[in-house]
Image (cartoon, rainbow, N blue to C red; front, side):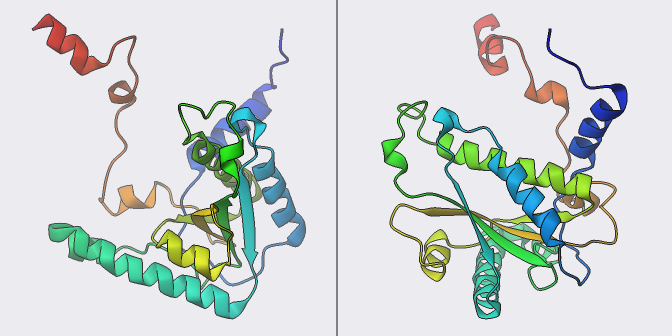
Length: 220
């Protein structure tokens, strides 16, 4: 039988899951290098399909490059607002990133040469992206345990970010992560607090065997 965590350790794992937040508000100050190393190591210990470990993480320490990345995000923010139509003004009121305030900016990307990895990807090539997402989630949960905030920014043109970071052909940026000190975690996900969306009931997302709509069609 596998060893079960004790009650306190098990509760801590679930606490990190339920209290993890996509943070947008940071306070000035660096991230302890030792803590940052632990977060990066947590990411690097994520599961990956075929053990391909497709994540690559760029720590952005050049001020001009951070500014260029921020400008890229701002351009996409405006285009996203225009694409939202009636919700444009509502969207523009949201704080969607904290790149100017956070202590660290990390760009998480898919490595180049992924076509050589076939194990688990022959029919599902997007498993490389799923693996990178696992690495980000590992880092996010570890950050919650460390009292550090992380915000995932996905508002950018991948080609522009690829060019800014001088990525090789085939590499693909996935996320800009804002990492830094915070005053407090949001009591609820920020988009719930802003009435942008609500969490779907678990019952709407979990079912047995056949897709619910298919069951209704067969019984009609």
